[in-house]
Image (cartoon, rainbow, N blue to C red; front, side, top):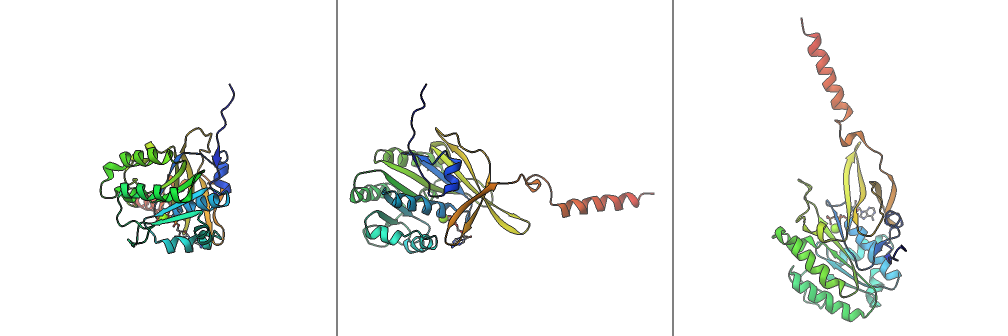
Length: 266
Ligand SMILES: Nc1ncnc2c1ncn2[C@@H]1O[C@H](COP(=O)(O)OP(=O)(O)OP(=O)(O)O)[C@@H](O)[C@H]1O
Ligand SMILES: [Mg+2]
């Protein structure tokens, strides 16, 4: 049987595209999950930056950072959101500052968000579209049981409007649980960012946990975030003994204590 052709959208990060047979299938909703500071927002910026480059209609919804913060962060990676906004290729919806202007949301209300997104899409016009909702989990923070239903609602409506969706979802630092696990089931894809301290350094990783219709990588890769460049995918992360054993120093101390207690025996 002939393989059906799947149109894929480049994520804007070469190394991530390689893990995904070229990119994210058009029309998909992909959940980007992970702890604070591990690269979700920066990945989202790359995804929209690539959309601008490819002439897609782009929308970026920000709930945790102000519009200005997103503009500045993008500029640090040489992605020009300001010009894209002026040229009506991008609309940035600010759900944090509660301003009264046209592209601000006053409250984190999902129906208001969808209404605003559709208004923005009409403003941008027909054609292939990309949207980032950073974060979607903010909309169910005080009602995590709604995660699944909300994600389903967002996916259903936005797919009708020719959107390929990247929705970030946060993880609790303490338990590593997603705030509302529902989105992982509804999403067509799950890209998980992780971070860890290794030998005194902060390291970041990426793993494709799910991407429907895609023979994706199943390995953990290390990533770095570089000034002027953004996310760079490095090699497959070495299987680290630290993942499942005690640090060598601790092991040495235990062995030492055992030896001493044996010596003390009559
Ligand atoms: N210009 C830069 N050069 C190098 N590293 C940077 C630069 N800007 C940001 N970073 C790194 O990226 C991190 C922020 O990543 P990002 O905003 O994507 O995290 P996040 O996963 O969205 O976190 P949160 O859940 O808190 O929103 C910073 O903590 C810093 O380590
Ligand atoms: Mg973020």
